[in-house]
Image (tube, rainbow, N blue to C red):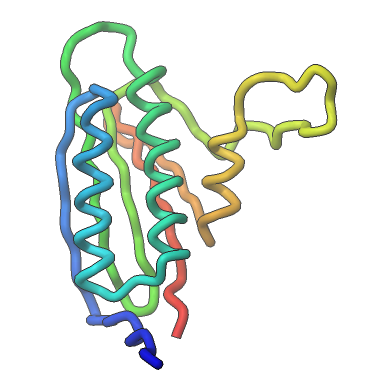
Length: 147
């Protein structure tokens, strides 16, 4: 029987990627998350939570944040600090605070479109923080690492 090693929890370990506002770029972020997760022995559950959350956030930014067709940079950072994985996403798109979206009503018929992805993000992560500084949106997603 093999046992899984606990996650490595250096005081600080990080990586960063800059992508453009093209949906095909999300695959590059997913590959980075996979490498970072493998390097730190993350559980499959944690990897899925990170991948689903980042996919939803990046899809929303790329699909809705820009009024023009020009290229824009989106920066994704992964950091382990103490017993937390912190993911930050920064973009220069329109101001949008995902914490202000309402919880979708899953019981309504017909169901109103929208908001489900951000609902998943808020429920998959332990903490979600939004700020806007100097025309840039900053979204932080945090998840506690299990022993």
